[in-house]
Amino acid sequence: MKNNNIDDLLRNNQAWVAEKLALDPMYFEQLSSGQTPPYLYIGCSDSRLPLTNFTRTEPGELFVHRNIANQVSLTDINFLAVLEYAILHLEVKHIIVCGHYDCGGIKAALEGRTIGIIDNWVNPIRELYLQKQDEIHALTTREERLNRLAEINVAAQVKNLFQTSVMRQALEQQKAPMVHGWVLDIRTGLIKDLNISTLEWQLHPCPLLLEFRLYAILNNKNQPEPI
Ligand SMILES: [Zn+2]
Image (cartoon, rainbow, N blue to C red; front, side, top):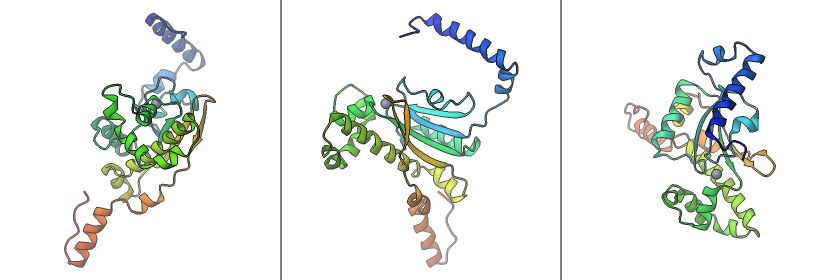
């Protein structure tokens, strides 16, 4: 490990600032003028996954939310605030849910290892595993099973995005960002686009709302306010 000493980080910071200013004396002045990132990145907290490095993006280009095993939790107020701010205020054009192979959260979910509060956090992924265990157990190696569950998890989190009220509202107004499900292979450094189709969720942004509207039309009542 290169930077074992905390002072290394501050020295690195000063060197990095000097390099940036040598290339562009206005760099930080422009950076401080505000942010209009085109992307919201939802990734795993794993220290090996700063997406900026893997995609050569600069400060100001990625709005970020990270948690263990890159989950889109409908009860996580932290995540929901990030999502709302990204969609309504920053008006991001793309949302990237990026999982990765060799994920500790996926291992905990698949293998049921008890490591504390993380057990609770990864329980939705364990539920996914139980739903898909025939498919997962058909794979021959542990690595293949873990990798497949990482991909299944990304697809499930993409789907969850479309269950949030802010996303449904954006779909109604035809202002929803495009959503992408990716997985990063740490062994190669390469990102794989899982090409998850979101069309069926876009066509039915809120089944309950459609039901209300149908009810209102059939009963000749005013349509309800959007939820
Ligand atoms: Zn992870």
